Length: 318
Ligand SMILES: [Zn+2]
Ligand SMILES: [Zn+2]
Image (cartoon, rainbow, N blue to C red; front, top):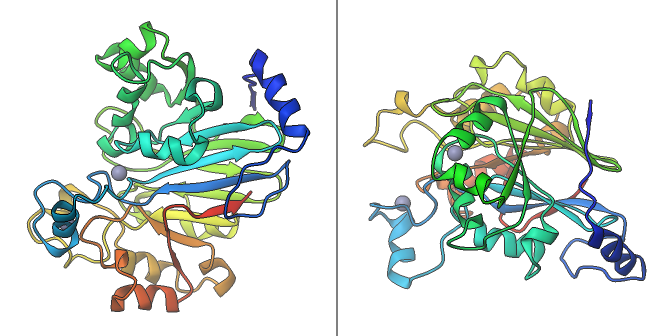
């Protein structure tokens, strides 16, 4: 077990402000010492609108100049210490940090970033922390060993290290990292296209609840861990729901971009009691995924079977 603390001098000041009754306004009803997570985005790496898509799913976003739908990301807040953690730095990180910490200075209010893997949607947003944009100061960045070396040895990422915008820490699979009292995070390694880094999901353990976040995995069957048993051991499971079924994409070779189809996952989870199915939130949805439309028959089918589709802005206590 690794123990780490990032107590900065102003944390004491922030804590005292917190203790005299300052609390965030938010949808979830929280007490001053609560820990909660927030869904900051739910879409596959390419986001919505997806470059090059002229189908119904994306056309209106381009036409109306609507803001993108955020790529999959989770924020964690511990109100007791006024600490905030971000899982994945997506291309939408500017909106997502605003959603997590408001207009506060991220160098002061963001106590750590955890990255699942080196694919566009999960780490490209790191560039926003560099000199050309935020120019952050020593934000802790937690990475698996191969990912750590990749960032350290390749531009433009290593400039963030040399300019001390970020401060690298190595994490290891299945090693619990204690963040604050009653808050820890454990990386779980999963099979995926690991060109530049390992791929992990995270188990986030709060005061009374545990969440599992696996936005990308090739197929559940390729994993040496039982996803069914993992679901039983947590309170929330945010799982790869990239594609609903194989009919969804007809212009790409699906064997090059394997994901568990939602219908395959539902089949695998079929014997789970309803209380376990209720914990599951499909996330990391491709722009083509019919689950993005709550009026679709696919959405209604998934929800009527006890599952959830992750929604941006959802907050849950840990
Ligand atoms: Zn992804
Ligand atoms: Zn589209």
